[in-house]
Length: 347
Image (cartoon, rainbow, N blue to C red; front, side):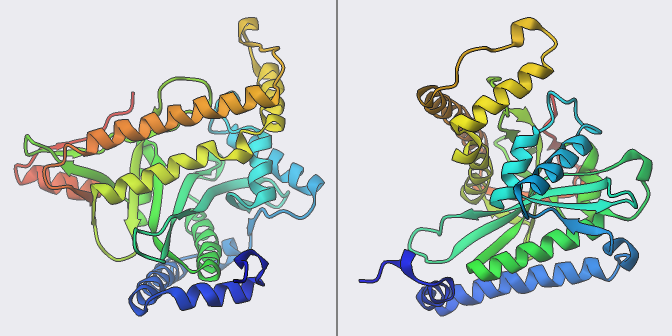
């Protein structure tokens, strides 16, 4: 028997394609077609002039990647406190290993004025299926306040979506949809791209927003309340609680990848955050050994998976096992018809 790891990529792809049933292949190709149609819809209203200024930060060499990572970090500081911003090493790892796509608009001086960090997250096939699914997940999108009103968001979405579609085709992935963990103030922007918040019908007959929490990026115990939003490429606005659980757990799993919890990274991160600490009591001087790194990964992974269990318990209160995606306008319409809609509030 031939080891699949020894096969050339093109041969491995043909083998995987052969293993798909006609129905699975049709399902996969339909998702590509829907994604292509969505991209073309955005392209029709995009600015060619802005598109020329959009670029993707890909790995070229170590020094250039470090420079790109620092640019992303400095851009992030416009929206986050430095202690809460993702550190430069995380950006660097993401670029170097291709774990996240950073699509940006640059000004005439080469500085970032708008950025989108996204990722094509692979999910395991359904039981009894050979078809792998994926999500186009948006981690963050932002524009320099000095450039608000300039049409740049569409253009970076187009560039990022186009690159992910090519990845999906190469990897034979069905792209289930676009997902994101979002702040309240971006809902209307995301609604323009057909992303909507998720709701279940509870035992009181109310439509209750799912209480999604982003995984903590530090040692805090709780998650960060966010609004889960999604657009499905099959054209639907309804999924099962089981499907939603799989989606959110795969999003959370990106937080405890080995690449972000290695001994080298944890030691670098300790020194970085020590330099940012304002309180001497927050400075840590313990050595980061292999054993400590492994222990931290186990504890952090368990903490994130605890959030998964908490979320599953909450959506398990759905009376029909369904999740409905609704925009702000659609929720207002339901309220106008006498129905009760309860939003998940940020704390």
